[in-house]
Length: 439
Ligand code: GDP
Ligand code: MG
Image (cartoon, rainbow, N blue to C red):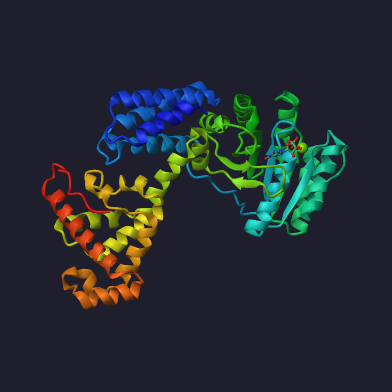
């Protein structure tokens, strides 16, 4: 999905200031990208409007890193559109819990029936019973029985002459007898939505009163999947959606529109033909995939995960009061290291974008390890008050850290310069350039 969108996002990431024009440009790209990903037109329109409002609002303009903030807004809105955090499977207070699988032929109902049973057993320690209620093709019953054997999960079947409602009812009675706590009913599908199919499914639903009606849709079918979801939901009031074949080359536009159009959650995603390839649906991951900018997003994610905001604030205020110690330095390094490549990260440290000089303080990864070793060889007191340092202390630290005394000296000097720089920076809020540190 659109290299152009990625380009726009990249451009924005580095921006210290975002103008309304930038936002307009960006939302135009997002709009195109979503349409290209087969997202419903009306959904796109609403979406773009919301992003624009938030992006032009204070939330973005007044943040430290507005470019990233815009991208964050886009991602959050996308995630939201797909239903936010996915919900769990219902548990009935009368055992067994009954799940009815519906969908068009070839969508993946039978396979997903097996996958779901497998997941329920493995993850939730449940004892499911599978029910073959697709009586139109003998092969369908065989298929489910084969899956049952593979998983060693029992399958209830009555052949092709029985009525699906009877099959479902008897299966539930059998499940009670054998102490199954879940019953998953695999129903018939058709190539297209038709009245006969809906009648049959409605009958099963009315009689069985399932706790969940899961619609299985093929993600590869794009916009069609959305129409299918809409009609199934209208007629059967589904409780959730399973999106299959997401392992294929799909953009996932369907995922976006389905939630928006039916307002039913996407609960699971089929990621392959194998019976363990069913995952909880993660709207966030889907959002990243749709935006096709995993790297940019993961950087933002990393920053959010690993930078303890409160700690950063503390550090900042320490910088301001110039009471920054080697311990604080260690803390800061730990946070920075959590996040990966340093160049990308300096910009995220509050105030660091104002401290141009910081870029010249050489902070490559290997050196960080050495610096850490040196600081760790200092005593508590030394870390708080570097003025204590004398020749014998330096020698001891050098020995303890396995680094030459010259390096200890250099670190002390750099630290001193850094403190001066901080003082300067905080004294002149206008953001005067700091003094250059040495490499
Ligand atoms: P049903 O007609 O709705 O019961 O569909 P089936 O369960 O028989 O699946 C139809 C085809 O889709 C089979 O070949 C499955 O192996 C395949 N399939 C189902 N789910 C997935 C999935 O998540 N990924 C992939 N790649 N194939 C799937
Ligand atoms: Mg089937």
